[in-house]
Image (cartoon, rainbow, N blue to C red; front, top):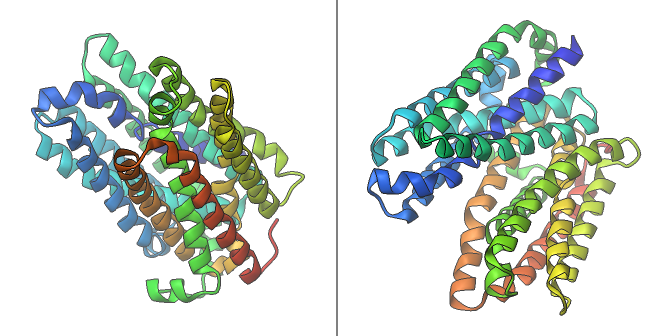
Length: 387
């Protein structure tokens, strides 16, 4: 039964990743048809992110009321309906409205599943869980590409993914009996209801918020601006730069698959430190003057270094703050992560535009330093031992 439940959870995270990269791959075809400027994709993305932050902060209340299984099923169902709406939308303002349930569903399932796995499963499963997200994020653009190349348009791409999400929603509702016992155990562990102010006041809470903010700032800045840096500053051909920028995400996905085995030997804290060291090496390689392959190799190293950090810090949340507080804290962690995702890549964009894109590795290094310091502060304030 446990293996079946794990399979359902893994599939849920593939589903979570599927639509994440579809807007970017579909937008070149969408904006002329919708009659809006190309920059308007950012507004939809910001609405989704804002709703995700809101739902992440409400995840503790929702999970208390419904249990992780129902929250996951309802959230995936919301996302499925939103994506189905995307496939029929013919105006930009409708997409903006549909971005609201899309973001609310994504944030709830993300927080609920992360806490559920952190409480009930070993660290390796958290790494593999986030590897599954990478699989979904990589497959999504291929589905959209298939629809576009086949002439059926971006609407069909969203419709294909919506159908997948609807099927998963049905599977999740059918799987609810598998969740009940563990949901009851999890509810018994919860002795506290915490407000946002109380969560932030916990020892180590500010440190873990900064850690997540900085990690997601590194990941999203690298993913968004690596290609531009390679092309504009290093003179790498556009096609080559684009392919190696995609290898950054492939590196994260493969790295998380490998990390699931490495966690059998190393603690979560050691995994985070290892990832930070690899990122630092990758940045250093990018800064070495010389052939272009050094810069390309450095980018891949940064992707590999990112792999263990996010899942390892999340899995350590019950140990760092106590099982009774973990859902509330993870909700705030997710919100901090999404704020970093939204805020810091545009900040570098302004720097690249007004100063130079050559600041890219230095920007990543600065964020890495703050991530390292905040994680070390978190370790000092932890209430328990990390596995």
